[in-house]
Length: 377
Ligand code: COD
Ligand code: ZN
Ligand code: ZN
Image (cartoon, rainbow, N blue to C red; front, side):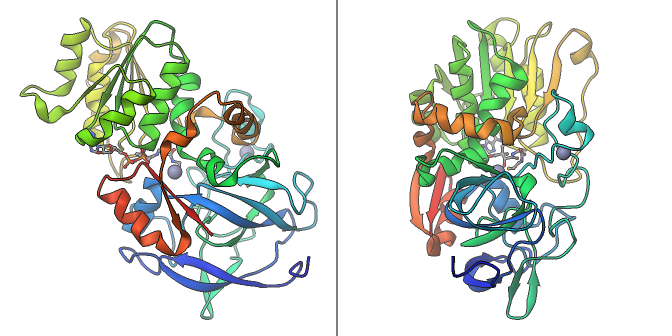
């Protein structure tokens, strides 16, 4: 390819500083170094976490930054030492790397690679602590090593996986974050049992994916909870047996859930990212065998205050990142399952916009009108 080894100029959405909406700019994308891959992004979803980047919820992150972490594309070129992909392959960038070498990657039960921003550095620069992005002479930072809001982007080979070359990239991009985060919380982390009851707090793209996981696992009662009733129709279409708004009750929603289920819900999930709703989800779970899974990430610095008696009776409080999936292993299989129509990923794609309308995509997210907007380059 004519671009191999050269700097590529392309469009990208840069968040210049906290609170500023992303602006479309021409960026220079340097060629991949050793164990790095340069990818042409074809489609990317907008996740709530991208909005959190814009709002400055991650104190360790450096700006200017190119956000976006739910994309799909085609390999343009590879650096020395890369063996997992080749130019022309369809790929999904991994917002949770799988280096294969750290103690967590070597332990079959763990999925949170020690290279992530949760453990090491904020993945704001490549592993060699330099950036591949420049704009107007300034160094621009990466996000989670993937930065899918750039038409071309560079990532380490730990953060990329090849997928079926027949996969529709404008759809499977949602397998980069939202879907596995929710679906895996139900099937991997909670291990929802057939015939059980489930309650899902928050019916965004992640909460709806939890509903799909609960349904696939055979749950018989699936209760969706959201303050925005416009989310109820889709939740029911995907498997919720009933939906509740906390605003419709005088008593706290956890008391309502315990009352309508007898002793509490078998499995509860928090997919909003608020400490108060984590507390409510735990208190809603069955006193003896309830499992509460924390999926949403509350703002940095939040602290959970839990009455230990809630746990002493037998409840379990769990958490997971990316639904407990080891993404390099899981995503190609999820792509195949999607193509075999084993789950309704397309239901999450509420809007499709040209990349230039990224600002509109964020507005749709903030106004609660979208589930997932997919941007096309
Ligand atoms: N009570 C009930 N519902 C509420 C409340 C409330 N107090 N506040 C907001 N909601 C509803 C909203 O109306 C909305 O429908 C829903 O909660 C949230 O949905 P979205 O569309 O804003 O968000 P999602 O589904 O895209 O994702 C939200 C998470 C919080 C799960 C996500 O951003 C996150 O924190 N992920 C976990 C961390 C992680 O795995 N990160 C990896 C990359 S994201
Ligand atoms: Zn995300
Ligand atoms: Zn690792």
